[in-house]
Length: 88
Image 1 (cartoon, one colour):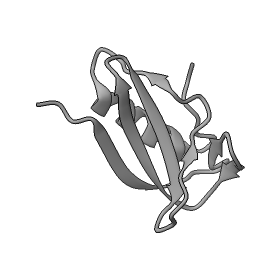
Image 2 (cartoon, rainbow, N blue to C red):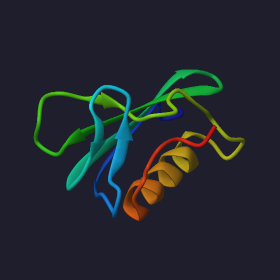
Image 3 (cartoon, helix red, strand yellow):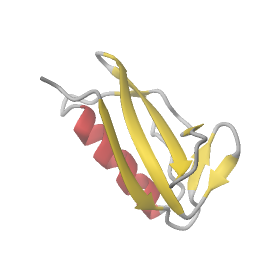
Image 4 (cartoon, one colour):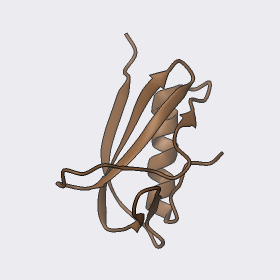
């Protein structure tokens, strides 16, 4: 059975995470990577503990051959480095 959602907390690095709705968000964030099709995933981000989710700029993303977990790990690292967005 494959997992269709990964969610973790991360502290955004310098430059935060770029969202479509509100621009850059910073600080303690929760990132969710959600499979929407066999080869596509939506990336959502929120201030940890908040109710509202935002779309990470560049989402939806193509799921790599390594799978959804690998995409989620890549997104977390990007947000931790700062300037986080999904690569085209």
